[in-house]
Length: 111
Length: 121
Image (cartoon, rainbow over the protein chains, first blue to last red):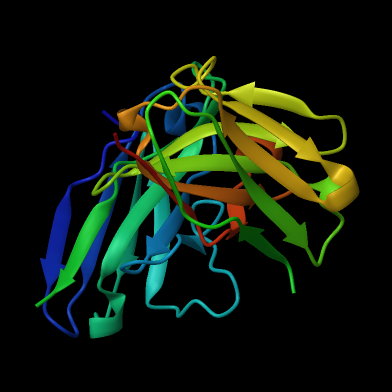
């Protein structure tokens, strides 16, 4: 059971918008720790996608955006493309664990 | 280019010991923490622990404390993850990753390519 909770799967048709939620608690997201997102294409290592809740590193399309409110965060992907099909994971810090935590990952299927 | 390169896949028997490596290049190795992450087959990412290469100070996830050891040899810019007695449940992909300079607020970038560890009798 992951400390951060994500839906196991989401899906959408090409061109549509999907969101992936990441729910935490008062010892991690709710405590003010930043949330970051990773994309893991099939058979590859994770690659960081969003940092500091809502910032995109250079090279990441502006179709990807992040947000955070209270004890939750979300990743939104607009204009879905076939190449977006991957697993997406959120990450933060947890003061109770005194360490970093991940969500369980969400598999995005582009229909 | 900043990169982390991990050692190759391993096949071991239960009870055997193992050490896998993660070599950093393209940056000042002692300035950034290194973290290890486990991904069991078909499962999510789990933070195992991290090391500060400048002084070898470590932090472990309580779930992994006592079962694995994280170490570093800064003279060859390499971090290690080791087991003294493997179990079948250690079968997983293991990634190393570099912390950014954000402390508790930091993220992990880049990641190594992963080392697949298979433990089977």
